[in-house]
Length: 470
Image 1 (tube, rainbow, N blue to C red):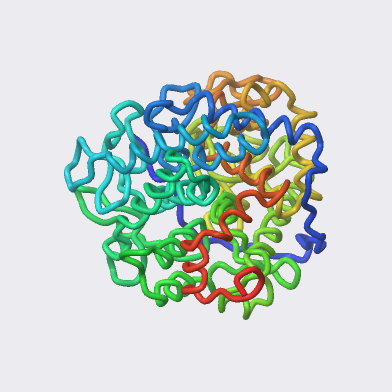
Image 2: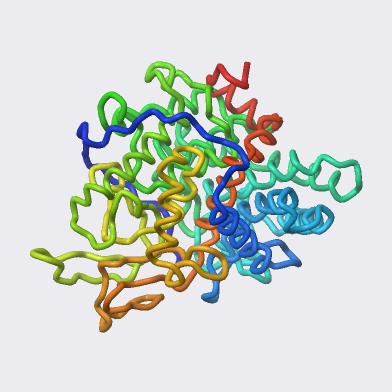
């Protein structure tokens, strides 16, 4: 049964040993051949696995899979990247994009438990790959709808031609966006709920900071219809005091699983713009993610749990597959291992560390800290080679510490010497890799989305000023 890819908790970590130098942000085409190869292989993942008829992207491959609407948002983001790199023609990319938007505009909406794709403009987290209807009893998802619509808005801004296909892309994206009833999802009048089930109503937990939910509020504030009031951003920020970690140059809003520091940044250029919270802090959200990236690397170098394979060059904890739900003797302790889970450094909010490394955590942080991400990519490829780097780039995750060949693993395989390796690629982990390489190379997504009225309006209503907004 599919479950939400979110786990909420609290812990504490600090220490000057995690200090990170303030490096200049490098950007431009001078990237190692490996990064180009990663991007090309990752693009092919979306090209080869996405349904050509309805545009739906699978949650994972090669395992049999339902569709993830968030992965579909990343697929929509992939097509313009592919055009700019010469991996797909503009006409073919536009046709794929229009097919996807046509599907979501025409797909049935309503309060029923089955036979529908969404309700109140939102969409269900997982959909059947062929019918496009709600898969099993998954939730109507506010965050996954946001990631899908972000991909649509990027497509609408990038496909700016006058021909009928690109004109229809822009029209459909705006209509789908305008249909979303954000106020309805603001179930308690303060926070946007994580989702809704027709069987039981709204999920009691609402989105508050700091995590990947930032983009939800920006789109809700910038919406042409059903927009939330500016107080919604203040409600989101109200929990920030619980999230601060570190001191001096390491101080940042912490969130253990690193995707929380990446997702919103894929479509929003936070460099040089600040809301009230970051004006008080003295730095922007991009710098926050840079510090969080260094924290991840420093944590792996310190390796407080004593896992095999961690180092200053091989690191990265985020939501990803894992080997098994099992407890095994490891050193002098009993160690708990998990299958799919949101992983992060111990001591950060939602920290969970069972020795499982996900390459997307490091590689999708390329714009934040290229000085440590590029060596990480090279080390992952050099040390682990074809065990984790294959047809579509890096497999989702691996765990060098899990070497029990008799364990009832959920997927992947275990080598008694090198440990567990996943067999799948996950769309929501592939997408950030491709997108953030593109942003680092030439600001492709960021520069396009700076023209989006939804992003600009949402940021301004949230109180952001400075930089490209002024």
